[in-house]
Length: 278
Length: 312
Image (cartoon, rainbow over the protein chains, first blue to last red):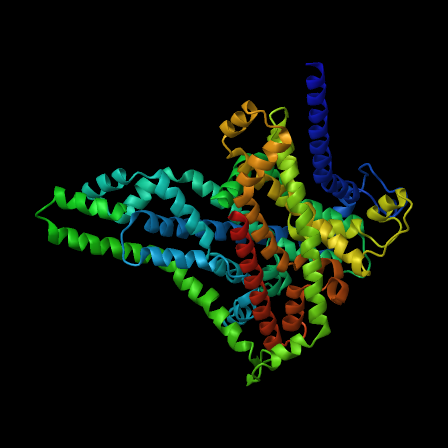
């Protein structure tokens, strides 16, 4: 008995130490970012370096504001991510509803076509996409991000799966017999049931647009239209590298998503696992 | 299946109203096509057409403004004889292995620890391990870029100094850059894969373990004969997605090497980006995109092939 309990203690200690190390390594860069963001460059570039927060929080952030249009870029990102997310929620739920509950010819083949588009690497069409956007005169226009961003095969797939397993056919048939139009079956019956699916998809999409870099870098040319990720790159492009300033901007650009994540972490984590495991 | 059932049901309920149900069916089909049409219209414009146009451009010489000139396979020859392209390809492959393999391995170990019955405070561990994934790639690249400073006061140089090693020029040496970029990829993605594996572990029915315990199986045997086989589909999925992701590596090297496009950190997508938006060579850039696509197709097929072999 004794040897078994001591063996259990060892494995418990082993598992805990793995998890504690992983946690520290995961959290440390956030802490380090904050320490650097509150110290002067001289303190940062010294051996041993600062390990505690300093007093330059405001000074460093003021330098960020002098280098890039931080709040403008944050606002741009918020607007673009919100509109894209709302658009994707509407379009994906409508299409998912159609694939799950409506009868029309070629439905399955069309659904498979949508799934196939998911495996195409996005870079394949990058250059013509850029040319189309410039021909439409959408360079440096939010439409360049929002309109192509509405194409979301995963969203349709996700909504179809959720609607077919959570909205009973009987409910839809009953509503049809009562004379409900198809749009009202969607709007008054399906939408209230699939609110959790909306929340999940909203989180995935919002985070994706917020963090996206390559496409905004290509199409948002003017400084006034840049999203925060593109603007952050402007911080490191200077000849004189002020690491305190750079990490201050990076830290404050990261904070909003981290807060949203900490508030809704269950939803976040389940949304991504359900998406992947399904 | 449900389509057949409801059709029968409506016929039974409404045997006289065949004409009415016909127009209703038509209405329903129309609504169906209407609701799915935005995807297909948008995809035709911003997805399908660009892809076809990429294949067209791959065989032309064009700087974005003047006339397009048909050049046959010349673009492909140019790229395939460019040592820089091969350098970018080998860089991508090396970073794929350096960043992806440890990520999946450590992910499984962490998921196993998180799933162990004797562990408390699971949600705290889970949240903190997952947090890097919420951070944007740009932010991760900037933060790690500063940690991998070439100077002696760079964080990683201080750390290796504890082990008696000399400072490394992370941003200018071949292996230094690869290790730095792989580290940031690893840090951002390991938690994501952990959570995916954890979901897979939780889906394994506990009866299997209970039966094995009754039969006197050791922990090692349980892992070998229950956990790993049951987790196989998820492992295949993560190998698949992380391979595709690794081949598209762009943001981290761009932030690390800046506008110099140093060849030590060049990846295939960065090569493509440089051809298109620095050299205004849209033809060769498109040819690069096509080659990348073919590489992804080949590697994915190998993945599927191996997965099927192991599955048997």
